[in-house]
Length: 191
Image 1: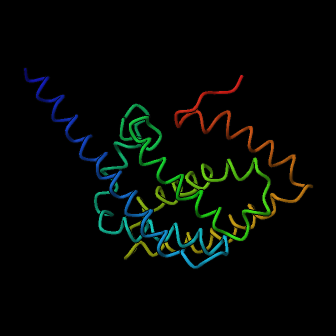
Image 2: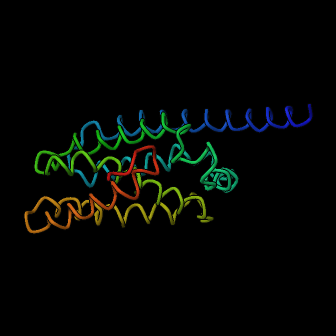
């Protein structure tokens, strides 16, 4: 009986946190879409999307370390890579698909890269989130500076990937990511 109550309590906590993730992701997507509606430059759209996440998450920063402890457990249903987190992750990946597809860069990219890029940009957000969790500066100024500095670099790498000379490197990176990173988010490893 006690174990059942504890399991229910843990399950209820996970359900509430998962609800928070879902709500936060939808709020972020709506906010980012509104902010980048009239912007076509890929670097600007990416920075808007990442900064929007920081703004939407700002009120929850004091709880970030507690969420991270649970989310960092690979067996936790609260991990951003878990099956239970799929709805929030799918919403975020779709937002990054829109971030790219609404940009002036998307028509210039190889179709393979366009398909993979939203997942890669979501992984980039996970790096930003990790940095944000540990940021103790007022208004997470360091994370905001990190986003401002790394976004042009990410945009340049994505832009360079469209050139034929980089195509073998892009294909190698794509294979590596598909075989080792994306399987952890609910996909199967290719033979």
